[in-house]
Image (cartoon, rainbow, N blue to C red; front, side, top):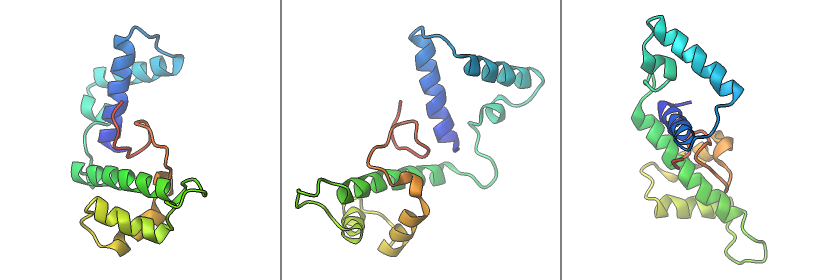
Length: 136
C-alpha cells in the first residue's frame, strides 16, 4: 500500500474520531502497537507507513491513481447495459480512454497495464480501494 493510500485511511480514521464514533477493538489494538513502537524510538512516519521507502515515489503512486481512474472508465464502458448502443469493446474503450485522458504512454502500454492490474478493472471504485484516486 502506498503512503498516499495510508494517508487516505488515516484521514478517514481522523474523520471517524472527529464525528465521535467509537474505535473498534481492532483499531485500538493497532493504535496501541503504533504508539508502543513510537514510544520505543521508531520514526512515526515509518511506523504509520506515510513515508516513501526505497523504490517508492509519490510520482509512481499518483501514476497508479491515474491508471485507476482510466480503468474505472474503461470498465464502465465495456460493462454498460447490453441494450445500450454505447457499449464498447475493450480495444475501443482503451483507445477512447487513451485520447480522453490524454494518457502520456502509448496505447500498447495502457493495454498491458490493463491486463496487469485486475484490481482496477471495476466500474465501482471507492476511496478505500488500493490506488483509488478518490478521497474519503
